Length: 124
Image (cartoon, rainbow, N blue to C red; front, side, top):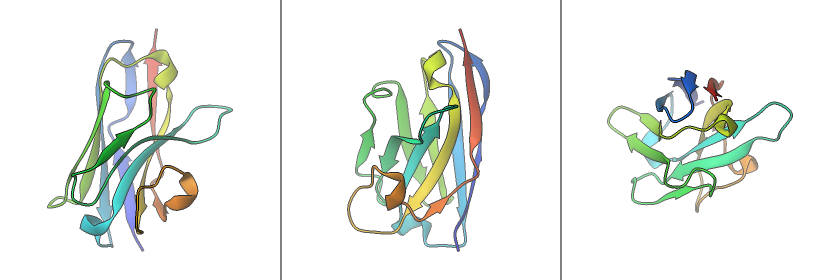
């Protein structure tokens, strides 16, 4: 069983930055594709970014491309999401997820383990 714990969320003004962290334990972190998803009130959970096990491949949703950066430190079993130039529409609960499979994963159903989420609120 893999345990994922997110941290780093909070309240920030539009244009500000936050860095989310997701610490993993109990599994083979360095072999997983890691993803970040978010869910705003009344909306479905949506893909934000992913990073392959080696860190060599990253993908982003169009809505965050150029503003968010995903990275990982396999020695620390941690994945990060640096969020810059935040907008009110980025307000959501952010979840990290681990995928133990071949290929990239953009859908929630493709991920095997989930964290509890961390709230990000961007004020205008």
